[in-house]
Image (tube, rainbow, N blue to C red; front, side, top):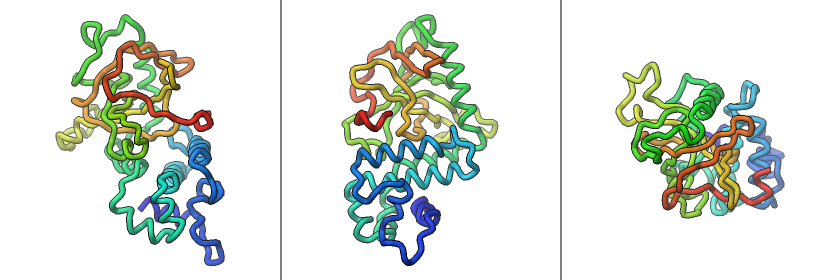
Length: 262
């Protein structure tokens, strides 16, 4: 479905060269390198991410960008698209759940909340809890406790994210921004969905303990019992966290080339 949206929005006509639509969505040449694709995606996503864009079509445009990026960043899928175009991608799309598609299908579980407000509220909570005076439990990080909005947590990575990065990570670090258990209509949710939380992924530079919001990743979703709450110090001015606990085995930041995170 997302791929069909991407194709429709490009306004392709019969005289246009075949199999270039997704490159045009990202405004890159067909010879673009993976680093160039990531840079182009990041720059465009900053303009159309629903958290920061006032454009009325921001969400659809962001999904379009993410769908194009998912295909072109995957060498196998890119080769199929270059050879067969939309037809080849559509024949495989049902078997492949990309990161953007997974994010936006899960996002429906959190409506009608506004994401920008939730993230701002989560940061206010993080600022209130920041520092050594805030200890989730006896001064130690906590496994399986009921994480609150504003907590920094370890969370299990989805299969789609693990396949995308292929860096042997099992868990990521992120900010809890919303919990289904706080919804006004929580009585209508299944037990599985009731435990679902939305997480804003964080990343850090190599050899740094300063964590920031990851501009390359969409929202992540996990279950409350699978989270580990981490003690942190939060700088509200710079929007940065320092984690005071040791991370678990298999938990770390994704690695990006220097030219990607600008």
